[in-house]
Length: 124
Image 1 (cartoon, helix red, strand yellow):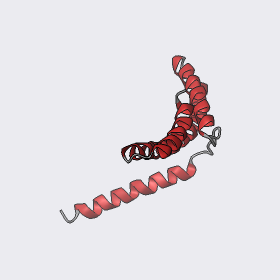
Image 2 (tube, one colour):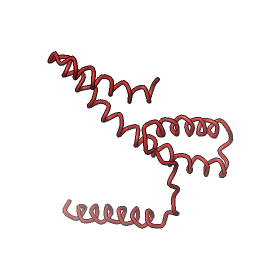
Image 3 (cartoon, one colour):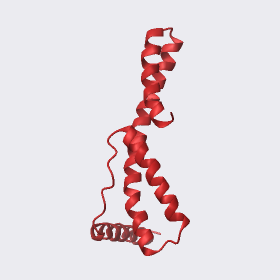
């Protein structure tokens, strides 16, 4: 059993090195459309999901696969921004929740309006 540990360790290190070399030799990638605001992220998410659906409905030729590859960068940017904003939105909703439990009507109103302003960007 002692002999298998060094062999296993060697195998794991070899795989990690191969993955690192492969990552360094991958071609340059696209940046995708930016998602600097939640509204921009939602717009890009909707538009690029529609483009992806069109591509998936057709034949996945090398050209189509290249398009899919390119548009996934914009979708990833949009999802990252949506995730960031919804995490903050959850915190705002928690503030509304706690304020409602502790009888703070002005805080409920203020934070509730802030919550609705952001949430309506996601779903009007």
